[in-house]
Image 1 (cartoon, rainbow, N blue to C red):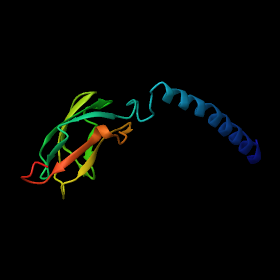
Image 2 (tube, rainbow, N blue to C red):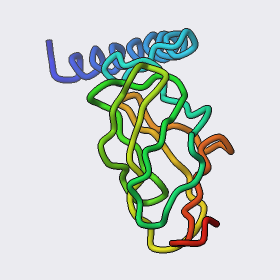
Image 3 (cartoon, helix red, strand yellow):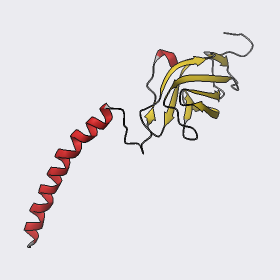
Image 4 (cartoon, rainbow, N blue to C red):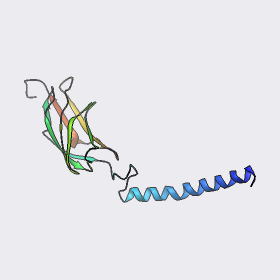
Length: 134
């Protein structure tokens, strides 16, 4: 077969692959299968306890949500990484809050191989000024 014949075969196969793979991927995502190495759906955060802690960090925080993966989950408090993340189950984990540069609210985001949790009011955490309790 001449080079132009192989080119036509390649184009036809590429079009078929795109035509078939797109709907299959959409269907797999609809039923909850994500392509991130089979780790399922992105994590969610539904509650944080306590919702505030000291500016110097070290507060143990329990996060409730979904799709946490043991050994493959990280937590961020704003722009800083949480310390000692322990996944207790696919719906519950504990983490120590990192220090902050100022008293302020931050979003707590959980990341797994399937992606990062969305920002919601349930993930709000507030750093408190040292010695003030607020």
